[in-house]
Length: 212
Image 1 (cartoon, one colour):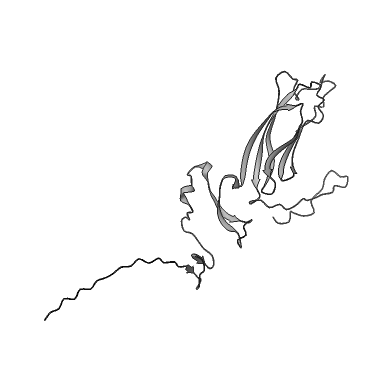
Image 2: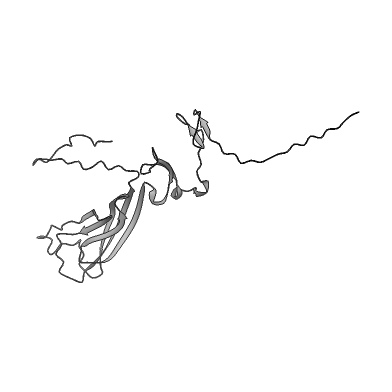
């Protein structure tokens, strides 16, 4: 007598959570690699954030300010990029002195420089590019001073023309300039190097900066 036996295969779907180790016998992370790692083509992180144009680049690096040992890997975008240029136009400045402009850029995260400065006198005033009187006798036209400085938690800007004697109190000026913002995540402050010339006109630093 022949018997037909029906075998039923049951399939169960169970959640699986495991760590993968390469060169590691007991990995504790989802992927843990011991030793050097070489990538043959590419690594993608959050691809929806990538923009395929020159203005939308993404930098991948470690964050030295992270509490994670050896730095946390992160994608660097927006103001966290190594360099940002912010144009400013300051109008209606009395006389010629921009004594103090608070940029509200925190000094603990960034340091800054100033570039592309332009001074525009208001309509009707003599301007600060002209000699004070007869150019035969007044040839010293002075100079601008541009300074960025720390005050409280923020960076400030001071721009002036110290030798100018402005007699017309209605004179106004517009100052245009760029502030170049550097993220301190990418730059290391090596401290100030002081060189004493001792009354000479030439000198040399004692050594190269420590840390380069």
